[in-house]
Length: 391
Image 1 (cartoon, rainbow, N blue to C red):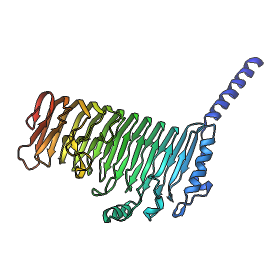
Image 2 (image 1 turned 90 degrees about the vertical axis):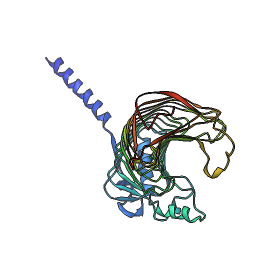
Image 3 (image 1 turned 180 degrees about the vertical axis):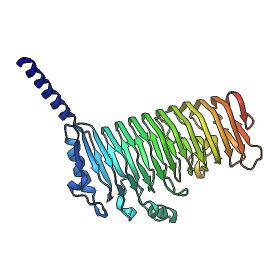
Image 4 (image 1 turned 30 degrees about the vertical axis):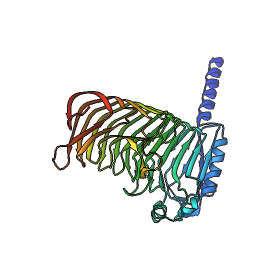
């Protein structure tokens, strides 16, 4: 009897130790000196909290309580010893003077970190001063992306709100297995280069249940993006969901296995866009799938533009080397703000191939018949196609 009781007590002790070992450590930024008053520079307290969490052998949480925290450019670098969760209940604000972020190109940077999650909170980058500088033609800093993930694996970004970024709001670069969900992005429709989410050189990224209202692409997809899944995206204002621009460099990684489903575009300058520079390149775009998309007063609902050449600089009289193939448009419905609702302007040297249209119903907003445009493109269609198919 004694041996049985002893065994039970020993088992209870082992389980208690195991459970205790799994309890995450919590590092409250206020205990490291941060003040939630929106005036006191909290950059160093945040970095000290990160250093403690990154060096911890147990799972840890960096906790940002309610309040406003003034943060300058901050680099949160790994590798770290265990999982880290950054739980933000407050708002991080950038300095009012846009020059305070300097020429680093970023505001908040996570780099070479694995198993990181950033949950909740708001980022207010105070970008209006920087936009005004750019518009005036003054000598301005390069500008800062609000939150960037470089060389990060197994990450989750959930429930974050980003307001008025100087440049791109959220950048995912050279990452693997990143889940983005319930994100809200807000900037004026004329704010320049404020892409909502930019993905490049990354594999296995998912973006779901997010609202993006900004001055550039809602989601921009750069070279080297593979296995990108986007679902339940609300886009507008903005420049749509854009693959590209691609082909800026001759040697460039391709884009493949990209899916966007169950999403709505409202008042955006573009809907589903693929754009490439009109210059030679080794890059490609293949296996792209768009399904169950609603367009509401969208200027270019469906567009492939392989003659992207802003101000005719660096590419006149050339053709795009990007090879576009296997792009499927299925159940795309709604209204176009321009008469040409579907445009495929492909490269004469590398025509688009394998374009598939199925159940497309886009009408012109002013009740005129919408039109389609095709150049150097081949493919197939089935079901109702409105505007008239030109493949």
